[in-house]
Structures are given as structure tokens and as C-alpha cells.
Length: 327
Image (tube, rainbow, N blue to C red; front, side, top):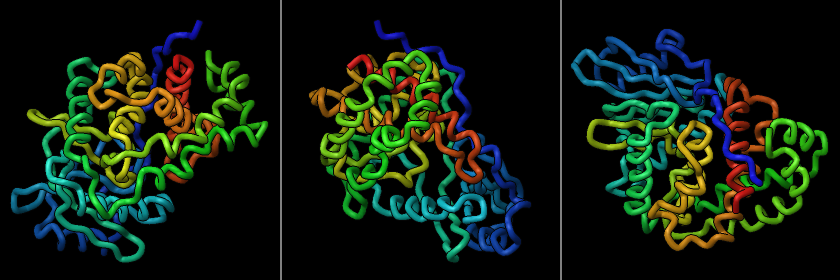
């Protein structure tokens, strides 16, 4: 009998090292003011997400607001690359995709600045409330509708996942990492060890399995969603890709939903309109690839500036393993 998905006390998706306005270099603050077109009168820092840089809603002297991200390699070496990717994505998103509009950007080779239209909303409650989860899952369906066919100018989903779905293979090559992963996998540890070669084989088919004609966000979780009074906003788009299966975002998101008390991912997936007609073998292959990413990542050293990322991956990995065992 497969153990049920445990009720997990999930770590928050927050880096713990977010910069404040006063922490930004003077020339960066001056450039933001110039781009925004007015002096900054107050800031409200973002309370979720993993970026160790600056992320806040700025209230301006002319009465307007702008959501600003500012990152440099000093906070995390990868953050500027992700910010540059997000600026690229913002320029090609189709009409109808519920993403805040990019107003301006600036890249001086070190600091990357992004200014988005400030939207009204808040992160979903954790653990998930059924009504809020229903709204978000509806938005995932709307994204697939608006994003089919996917836009030109973005990498394919297979290209973006090429290094992601190798987690189980990397784990298999490192006996010490296997032991750590088994110890961290809770009720699924023994199964993980006994079926590791099968998991590697399934994940080998993941890139072909996720092919399609749909735009995918690529990193949907509760902390990348804002619930407004009338609509759901999907935020943080640096991992977006095209030519993906319309069910991929749903599948990749559901381990985090299960981790945060949202229910059985297998049942949620089967009931969703994006999953209609999905090939079970393709779903298993894609889930194996994603699960391997979480499990392998969770036993690696923490990246610079994001100390709690590994705990977050570990919790998602446990939830994903439980789902994978049921297939």
C-alpha cells in the first residue's frame, strides 16, 4: 500500500535575504527614480519568492505605483540572467496571458532593473483554501488556452528542461547522494532506492513527453501567483518556454500544491481540463523528470543567497514521489 501524501509543514518560499531600498547602491536608486519618472515615497517589500535581490512595490510622488525588481551577481550569480530572461519573456507574451505588464527595464551589465505595472492582489493562503486553489487552477487552464499556439521568440520547453530532468541519473551516479536522498524521502525512501533505475529510465523519456504547442510558465507555485479581486495574476516568468504540452504547468505545479495542503495531486490532475487526453506514459515520464530535479536538488549545497531553497525542494520531492508511486 502506498503511504498517503503526508500533511507537510512546508517551508516558506522566501529567500530570507531580500534587499531594502536603502541597501541598493545610490546609482541604482537614481536610475530607478529616472525610469519611474517620479521620486520614491515608500516601499512595500515582496513577502514571497526566492530572489535574494530587491523586489518591492514602490509608491511614487506622482501618486502612481510600480513593482520593481533589482538584482546583481553579488546577491546570486544567476539572478541577473533570470531577470534578463524575464524581460525577454515579457515582450512576447500573448494577449490574454494574466501577467503584469513590463513598463521598463535597464541592464548596465551588472545590475538588472525591471519595472512592472503594480497589480492588486495577494499570495494564496497556506495551507491552500479550496476556493483559492480552484481559482488558480482555472487560471492555469486559461493560460494554456491563451498560450496555444505558443509565441515565437522563446526557447522550447524541451530545451529548457534538458538539464532539469537528469536528476535521477545524477543521483544514481553518486552513492552518497542516494543515501542522503533516501533518508530525506520519508515514507518513500525504500521505494526510491529500489526503483531508482526505473526512475532513470522513465525520466529519459521526459523531453519527448513534454512536447506540444503551448506556452508554459515553467515555474508555477503558490508564491508565483497573486489573487486579485477579479482575476488571478501569474508572476515571475524567467523560465517560460514554448512548444510544451498543455498539461505541463499543471503537472509541475501540483507537487507544491500537495506539499502545501492542497490535496491529492493525482486526483487534481485527472480532474483538470488541461489533462484531458494526456498520455499516461508521457505524464509518468514528465513527472519522473520533475521529481528527480526536486529530489536531487534537495541534497545539494544551498545556492548563494537562497538558504531555504533545498528544504522547499525536499518537501516538493516527497510529495512528487508519492504521486509517482501511484502511477
